[in-house]
Amino acid sequence: MPDPGEERLFFGRRKGRPLRAGMQRRIDEDLAVRLAPVETSAANATDPKAWFPQRPRAVWLEIGFGGGEHLAWQARHNPEVGLVGCEPFVNGVASLLRHLDDVEGDRVRIHPDDARDVLDVLMPESLERIFVLHADPWPKRRHHYRRIVQHETIARFYELLQPGGILRMATDDPGYLVWILSRITAHPTFRWAGSSMADFTERRDDWPETRYEAKARREGRMPVYMEFRKPA
Ligand SMILES: C[S@@+](CC[C@H](N)C(=O)[O-])C[C@H]1O[C@@H](n2cnc3c(N)ncnc32)[C@H](O)[C@@H]1O
Image (tube, rainbow, N blue to C red; front, side, top):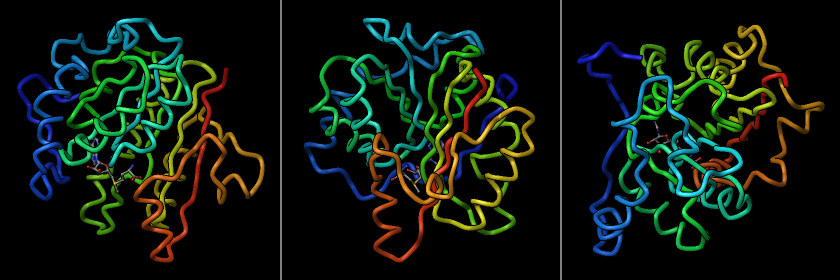
């Protein structure tokens, strides 16, 4: 967590092509009612279930949801769960808002900014699942410090997961794969939740393809799927 007053650096894109009028309207009108109240939440002590009008059975967090297809799918298929999504890229946030038209209930909260802000405020053991799907690999060695997966973030994910909770990650970048696995294996108690090679190469039925993954496949790159569990 940065010290008070210290600005945290974010290196990704916040804006892309100008939004069409309808998408801009979603940002101007629809986002406000779905905002996660991160600014006013107590550090390390916030129960994310309190962010929803009806307390969900569990809360799942997606970091860097991109176009939001995966998050909206999970919300549609898991009506008892509250989802929190973080994405600083405004075009992605507008896209998620559109996908949420098909989701019943008020069960999604959005932080349209750096996910580390959310990681800072949540209380320990407040999440059942965390998704980090195709995070930016920052391939150049001098940019590796920009990667969201660091020893500290892995330790924070572990702290925020409830016992038995699950961290799902995916990447198509071989260098980032090795980086992720070395950081997970350095953690004393995170456990790989798979049992065979297929668990790395095949998506589970409750894991829809993301937009980035589809592009990677079209371009001949091979996604790798990973699921890690905090022991119950
Ligand atoms: C390669 S894209 C993948 C998007 C999506 N998960 C998918 O698979 O289609 C990585 C996403 O992570 C977002 N991102 C990067 N750093 C982030 C951060 N610190 N917090 C939240 N999102 C972040 C980027 O804006 C981008 O949309």
